Amino acid sequence: PYFDFDNEAFGRLGVRALAERGRKRLSLVAPPRSHTYSRHMTYGFSDEAALMGLPFEVAETVTSDSGGEAVEAAIAAGFALPNPPDGILVGSTTAAMATIAGAEGSGRVLGRDFAVVAKEAIAVLRRFRQDILIVREDVGRAGEFLAHALVAQIEKRDWADRQGLEVPVKVEPGR
Image 1 (cartoon, rainbow, N blue to C red):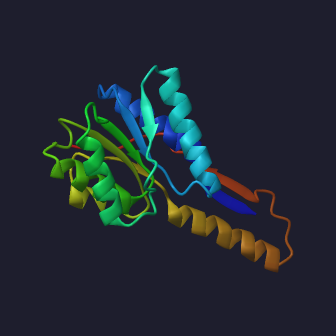
Image 2: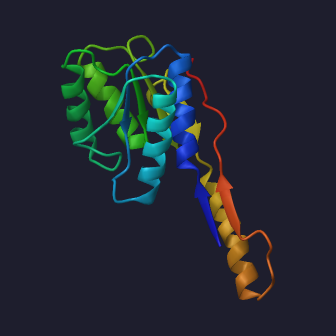
């Protein structure tokens, strides 16, 4: 049994949300490349951006697991270059906050100069910034699913639905 979040769908959904808001140069702060879900997220992001004809980049020096200071510094450095990204997809809450801090530190305003789509498992990002775009990951649903699978295994019951996949379908807009 397993339960997972569809990170390819997250990547695609994020690109579409950014494009709908007029963003033209996209960037991804992905999970570490050694993780399978990083490959899924990167593929969904890059394929959807390419299909829409939008230039994109994947952060090279930091990941969504990097420390906040490192992400903030990398984003600030990117915003100091000509033609910085104006739409950023981020794979974690901490990296999203650091991404916004790095961009804002360079004088940019979230919602006006750039947009961020972030995956969130625990509702904290709206308390940080109202204009962030959020895709929720329901970790409670995952835990419940796996608990039922474990009980079925212990009781040696046949449990037909042994695999689950949460497919995100909406981006919660900012204010």
